[in-house]
Amino acid sequence: MNAINSDRKEIKVPLTEEEVFEEVKNDPELVIDYEKKGVYWDRWHHKMPDEKKNAYRKIILNLSYDELQKNEVLKLFYLYDTEFINTNYKRRFRKFHRLYTQLDRYYIWLDKFDGIKEVETEIEREIDKLEPMLFEEYKRVIRELIGEKG
Image (tube, rainbow, N blue to C red):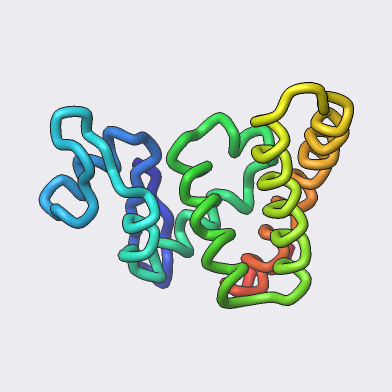
């Protein structure tokens, strides 16, 4: 658990999949499989109160893209938070997100066919370049959203 102080109130956020499961295990809407301790991550993000989302966002603001990739919970939070921001927030972010989504879908589609490896490799390179840019744009939007200077 990581604690973030927010307006004199400490908010604890779980940073491992096990901690998240322990926190949500009594909510059948959020649990996929009790035996495997599975969580519906999209619902977990959706039902989370704003102050808790902001606590996760503040943690992510202090990470590099590579550091984010090392924590599964933060990575999943980021995934669903980018969808949330894409739907609800900034035009510039939407442009990056749309391009990333289109490239990712095209890459998945190409993966089903053989003989197009050059195109697939080029798209993979573009996605690899775009992911850190999308992450930096996400951090910029989040700073505005939570009123932090960066």
